[in-house]
Image (cartoon, rainbow, N blue to C red; front, top):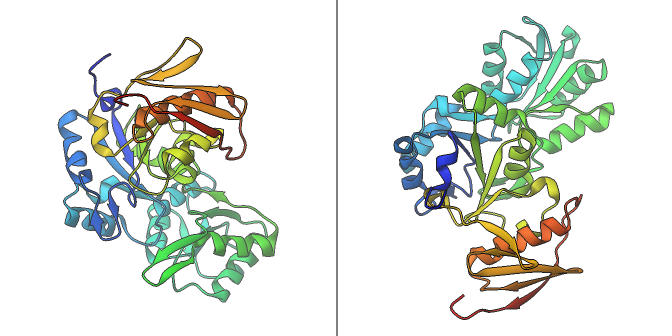
Length: 332
């Protein structure tokens, strides 16, 4: 319906953190205010993060310091999702070798599972999450248990994590070490897999959540894998150009400037006269070229281009960027 805010079609927002709510130590301009308005719009809010080492309360406290509405109950990390995923794979009271943080250990206990410290105790399962104190002996214990047939769950497979001194190896590198030693592949709870998003929606009781993120390969892919609508904001990693080139599974339903755009009507893209139109911008595909009539600074130009290119290339297994041919329209 014309004039209806985009957010009116959803009962919850499942929001990423870095690149959506904050960048480094500071809140992204307008993000906190947009999140504060959700409650008045009758929309629930949850935060979804691959972080498996910090407690939900620690993350919530950081968000509150920035002014964002948050409680421990609205923060869903891959430790919680991983423990819940594992609980669905083994019977109550099963023994679990926990390779990760104290927070992950707590989450496993909350699922009625019994942590053990060694592969020699023949654990029924292994759950693997990030902790900076993990070493070779910890990975070896995990490999011994996995190699003997234990159910194996990884909280996430992020290959890197940002640190103050630079980029450091993430949980994915530790999981890869165990995989290399055992020849097995774990079940994964975190982004870009579906369980983290499904866990958050289930706890909220949400039927129609909107996943909001800044990364195609984690947030958008994960939301799509969960079967939810996805919105990419342009306040973080990915850009209109990378969205246009995205492989099919990573294509968002909506391209948004920022979180405040949730409260505005989303412009309709229509096909007419052999081209796609969004606002005053149009786009059509000729071979490997997208011809765009509009201004590259106008997000509607990219929305029209995405509609045209994605329709022409409905099944792309890898990122494929078209050649762009621009015609700048007057007043575009």
